[in-house]
Amino acid sequence: METRETPRRRPAPRTAEGGRRLHSAGSAIVVSLIGLAIALFLNAPGLHKSASIQPAGWKRDVALGVTGPLETVSSALLLDRPRRALKAALGRSGDDDIDTVVAAPQPPPTTPTPTPTPTPAQRAKFTPKQKLGVWIAGDSLVIVPGESLLRQIAGNRAIGAVEGIDGRIASGLERPDVFNWFTHVREVMETDKPRAVVLMFGGNDDHGFMTGIPEGREVGTFGSPSWRAEYRRRVATVMDTVTRNGAYLVWIGLPISRDADQTLRFDVINSIVETEAAKRESRVSYLDTYFFFAGENGRYAQYIEDSTGKLVKMRADDGVHFERPAGDLIAQKVLERLEDRYDFTSWRGG
Image 1: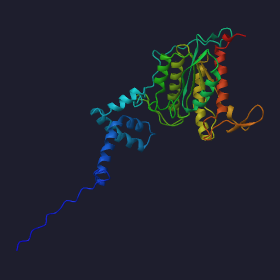
Image 2 (image 1 turned 90 degrees about the vertical axis):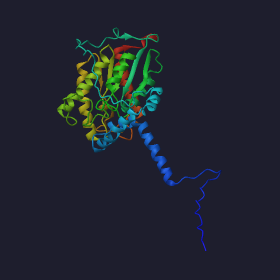
Image 3 (image 1 turned 180 degrees about the vertical axis):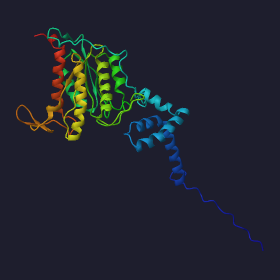
């Protein structure tokens, strides 16, 4: 008697509420991996920029080794176009560019004959119809003093701020690959033509890793003669770019910090800036902030007595950045330097 094999039945597909078909976990993983790969290629330029601006070390080397080919493939397949279009629409076309050129003024400025500080009668005059353009820029340390300065000049219609406060976190003169201040300063001076510029740099420059070093030149560790020479060149480049067409620059020095070793590194930077400013006495004013925030023993103090004897918190909890009263103090000193150079109050009369 013949026996018939019972045909195997396929299991009924699993469905969710509403009749939607359920997929296996493996399918979900595959879809996720495909989505991740697409995202990596679409964002390859940004990933490569992030890798390049990491601190020197094996992690940076590995990241560059991975993101470099990824960016090459993305560009070849035009997968980077959507990101670039979005960045352009947001006005941030250069976000992914790795620009390490230390752009010096062309042609190099000639050394002018030193001129004395103008007398009150000789100062250039500004009015609401002819405003004094002021540009405030630098790393994150400039933000609080910059805000204070904007508040102090807010009621003066003879002064106009250029671009608000151009403070860039984690930037400086040591790493143009993070943000190229040399290119940016030149562009602002050519486009907006401010007559007064307030800068503060160095808070992120107390390291030994520089980018944008001229070909064939080697730079040693922080504070070495070669490091000082290169950093001096960069400071001079910024100063000359700002002042070559008649603008006046107030450069705010780095403050004492809670970390004694960091303060010593800041001293190295301050000495370079102060020396270069002295070479351009009629065009650049160096504002030394060190003793603004030192206690009676000359060391770091987070709280400082005001004129009434009340203790006022001047420094942020990180021991580096400023609280509002410190910003107000620096802004007042900056304003005094600008008033020595320009007349932006006599228009009021009286």
